[in-house]
Image (cartoon, rainbow, N blue to C red; front, side):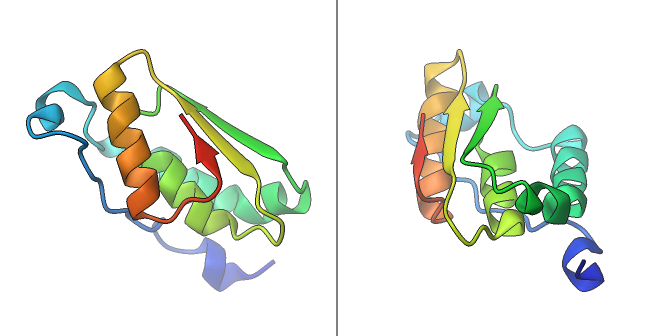
Length: 108
């Protein structure tokens, strides 16, 4: 296990809002987001060893967690990242954030 890869905070992705004004209607990354990103980064070697084919985030908000996890996971064979959110603006923001951070392949 590469301790350098699992130590320290998770990468902070750039967040992209699909439309002007969406920031007021989409959950902005906060302390709980950063905690989850840090835990996923720390667990990335164990998750990578499982060779996941699909990664699912329910309630993706800004898409920051999925984008950060994609970078931390560094899978040799890409998994499909699926994100869901009941808020259409959040779904659009997740799509824009994942595209900006080169999360591939993904679907909202």
